[in-house]
Amino acid sequence: MCGIAGVYALTDRPPDPHWGPLLAGALKHRGPDGDGVYVDGRVVLAHTRLAIIDTSDAGLQPMRSGDGRLVIVQNGEIYNYRELRAELARAGVRFRTASDTEVLLEALALRRLEALPALRGMFAFGLYDRASGELLLARDRLGKKPVVYALTPEYLAFASEAQALLRLPFVRTRLDRASLPHYLRFLYVPSPHTLLEGVRKLEPATTLRVSPRRPEPVRERYWKLPEPDPARRADEGWLEQLDAGLLDATRLRTVSDVPIGVFLSGGMDSNLVLAYLKRAGHRPIRSFTIGFAGLDDERAVARAGAKANSDQHTELVVTPDFEREIPAALRRFGEPLGDSAAVTTYLMA
Image 1 (cartoon, rainbow, N blue to C red):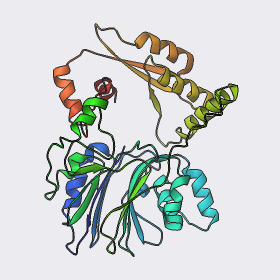
Image 2 (cartoon, rainbow, N blue to C red):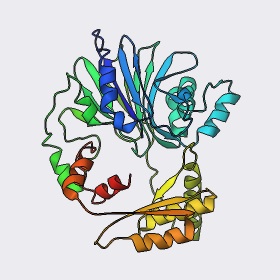
Image 3 (tube, one colour):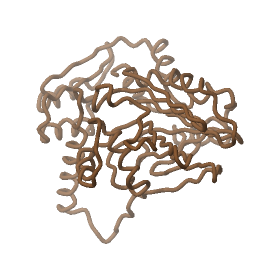
Image 4 (cartoon, helix red, strand yellow):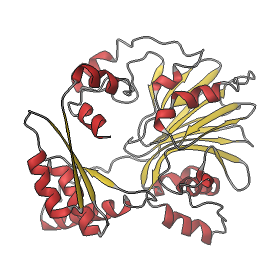
């Protein structure tokens, strides 16, 4: 989990260079392994890094393309970056790092928006073109990585979290009462809404572009979930396809330069992940389960799954102190979220 943020000038009044460190400081908890700021006449970009792929300083951001024209800040992981890197190398692209961000950057330099459908991963990024002055924001297909933005007559500001935007002097907001019913009904606020008036989420599989020639933001969707075919029934062929898809998805997510672990509960989803990790041949497999002293929990069921599929299982038993833990977890929420497991996940992390 990294943090990205930036301010783009929609007029001739440039952003304050001090806004870069301000944004990076607000997102430091998302990226303890490094931070960086890029300042141009029209844009300020900030990044805080959690190093997963290419943990050396070569993977630091903001990152420039080989020709120096493009500058990117990215949060996420491109799972198929090795395959894309090989394709780009055959096209003559020369790489300076082992980072998936550089692969994304050079793919965008070569193919622009046509590169997006080929990406397999979870990502959000801001890309600045120094030659044209255009800023491009994009979010992955299902919106696993967040992008929020605020628009004023002078500036477009974006960030991984709304709290960072609130550090900027020109972002003034209050409760968006029109979005409150969404939260009360769904226990979260769906895109493009937020609970803050004037702050919006970029929708999944969507790009947003602004430029000196077109300061009015243009949003485009680059992918849609395929429509189901009612003529096809769920038979054994579908089960085989699901099994192959889960195994492929698991293999993709083991691409990492740091150790991988599984948050293991007694539920089917995390136990499936653990079983597919074993089938994929990933080693070592480490699993982690949390329980509460004196309360019923899922440790026994999780322990059985770990015995079958994990190389090393760790149980964390805590005494509930909700008066302290709930406020601590809420401080890291971008907005209210009705997930009963949120505090448990926070403690495990």
